[in-house]
Length: 282
Image (tube, rainbow, N blue to C red; front, side, top):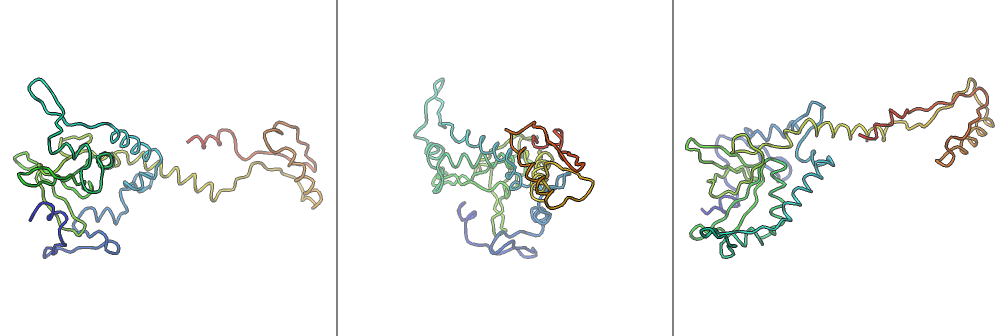
């Protein structure tokens, strides 16, 4: 069985003694021992603010979305070249089999720019980006297929070599050697696994999510009253209409700071101070 057959082959029989759960109509199948299933049932990682912070929910925060878009866009827009070192001289290795993959088209459906954009985005979301190196005769690289970082498990063997185990959508797991995986790491403690930026910034992202929800809820459900006029007794319909028509003369910036005359013992007060209004700055 070839390396692509192992990854994209027909649905394999589920191992005996293991129970699987299907999520959605024809969607992802999880082994009940898979830690990602527990995370799915919890709805993701919960911050102390009460917000559920996942990659998807974090991307709904404008600052996170902008950071990923700008960094991944900048990296994918940079020119990329492959060089060969000949003694003290360095020349562009256009004859190398990797040259068309990293500079033009790494696979059947992506350009070099879109592939690099995805790899960088995966690293910003998960701390790691992975691509399968599909090889042909004499292990010549033929294509680079991006793999979903959340489905990859990386461990280090006793001989310090790396073991990559990728879980397919049907629940089956496929093992690869490090020579068959292009691994893009972010900041790391051990040099093996990159740190997950979303996880380490969970509290800040969760606070931002809850702040946006608070603001949206206030605008949707809160009473936005600009000012209040109190009178000791009930007004007649004629007095109420006269007061309402008089107030219209003071609306707008061009009528600011004009003198207001109140009748019937009315008292004027505002409902939001300048300090309270600073919430908008958040």
